[in-house]
Image (cartoon, rainbow, N blue to C red):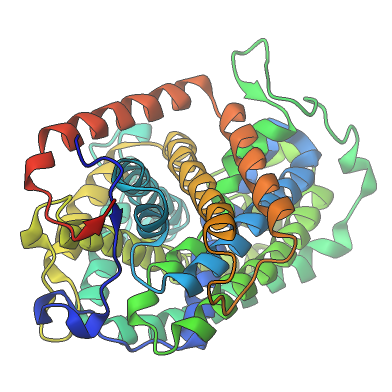
Length: 468
């Protein structure tokens, strides 16, 4: 633990060993597609039901609050990404600005975030895919969807993770191009939902607007509800732009492309989310879809639009893998950089002849596949949010520290009203963390206690070039 506060020096790619060097193949359209592909997914297609169960019609407000907090974090990410154009996202920024111990905690939290996000989206994809597979193949739902329905494992979730892992092994540019095509399918599907559901909008469905109140509170059934309780869960629906930051070393012009990708994708997605949430809660009473694994398709069926519902479900099956791809990509790069730094086994930090980290991709697939196959969606999403909130707080703090430490350092992108944005981002994330279920907070503490024990036990093997 003696070197807990040493800070990392960024080494240019040209000076790295060949087996540690990632290929630069991405431009800003790829990054925007990666961001939109990551952000627009399970959160709006699946978690809107979980959010409505906790907030009622005020889930619209929950989306707006979570989006505002994420927007502040996105601006901080954009500034830090141009100052430190290296893979690793919040982990790397913290290592450079604050020091090794805090960086380990953030990296350990990012492992939690990305692993659980990939798993949660795979489970959400399975919710849409399983009914279609049942109709096409005649396989019982209990066999395909795991312990929640009496089966052994969620087989569709494991299958889609394996497919995405294969794509990433083939190549980053190829995966990004396919991702961009699938993102268009997803946006068209959401546009169809709004176009079909909006004519059925009934203001009466919005009353009472916030039946469970604003602040998180535990109801007689033992479930924590309220606008902020919902925001703390559907916060999961907004992050994804941080996966863009992990692509810094694979971006052709990071100083220009990273801010465009991070900020642009975030703004587009806030507009999409609020519009879809408004159409959903206005079309039918929220109690009708609050616990459905496919709430938007259910709404369309309730409105007597079975063809539109089938189109939406099919589009989700086709397009939700874009979220899995984006976060799987980010997770593998976090693992890769931590291994390259010596904080994880160095043998994992090796790239193939195509410039892709095959070993770490396979390692990631095993971890997230096990989680997706065995755990339900709501528990996965809540715990993933805890890791993300920790990372967002760290990035906002890094931005403010660098404004004091190096106020004149070159910044291709400067966050407007930096102290307000950074402060609001930090306080908002802390408040959302406090709004998470108490059990989730406890799991997060246990996870990081385990991480600190591993850090202390393996400290002698660290080999990162760093300065105090």
